[in-house]
Amino acid sequence: MYTAVKPLSKYLQLKSVRIYDGIFTLHAKCTCAILLAFTFLLSSKQYFGDPVVCISGIPQKDFVVSHCWTMGMYIMDYDDGPSVANLTKEIQYGYSRQYYNQSLEKNLLNNVLGLKNENGRERIFLRYYQWVVPVLLLQSFIFYLPAFLWKKWEGGRLKNLCANLEDTLTLTEKTNKHLSRLAFYFSQDHKESHLHYFVCYTFCEVLNFIISICNIKLLNVFLVDFWSHYIKAVAAVPAYNWDEWNRITTRIFPKIAKCQILKFGGSGSLEYHDNLCLLPLNTLNEKIFVFLWFWFILMAFLAALKLIYRSVYICNRGLRLQVLRAQTRFMSKATIWHAVSGFSCGDWFFLMRVSSNISPEHFGQLMRMVCGKRSGIEKSGSHNIDTS
Image (cartoon, rainbow, N blue to C red; front, side):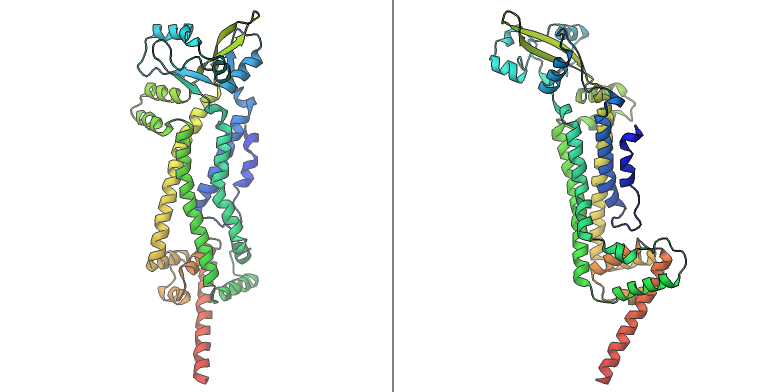
């Protein structure tokens, strides 16, 4: 089974320069990898068998399986709790013959012999399992979209500035030259480009939150009223009411269903064949979607928290200073304040992205260099004014 998902391990390897923060990585990259792993597992017959196995009196077994997979199967609406005798009777005799007299085209093309039986029970058709793999694949692409956009917009800027600084423990001559170039970069005016950098990243974070909410809605449409059912199922877990859990989850992901086939007999009359089918993959689907139930809620919650933090970060200069001090092992406020005086919000953000890709010791040295260069620029400026 590991071989099926092994290619994803390279995708999750940490890069030398990280252009995403932790929550962004969880949302865009880890979620995408999880969804792709589920897609590979559900597509691997050698691990979980065929998606549909049917018992039928028709000798052409492949035809029966293909027909039931294509046209759909159904379960009965037993919310009122029928007795075992009535349930057995309905499974044995199926629908009342009075419903067979519908149009032939409707019977053959749609595989429906009436939506209700003689006791008023409704058929609940199960066609979602045909779309489980495509939907999971689509969700993986959607979740990866912000990471893809940011990688294109970022354009390797952090890698060019921070390469070969993350693993060095001592300040060598080469490292000092690199830090000096970084300090010169931050002593220059890049407000416009840094603001564009910050706006693009914040847009991707907003997109992460929107995608989380949209995927929650998508599952609710794809698996009819999925979330309300699973809220009830999860509520039964603390009470160890596993019978209630099984009853609810089996209604969403039934392991056994019926499939009816109409075909012409040897004399040309219409024959009705009732088939019983097993859905082995629903045992796995049940576990996958309950995990996704919690995971999507967690991703939406973290994305919302990040947007709140980002809003406070933009409005509160004191918070930005404290976060920056924490990255420099609490360097004096005066040094940091002098180094970043006149910085815009975009400059602060870009500086924090650099700090997450170099060691705290190197970042502290960088801030001292920036402070020194800005002091030199100020002295040079004042000297020019005096001589003029």
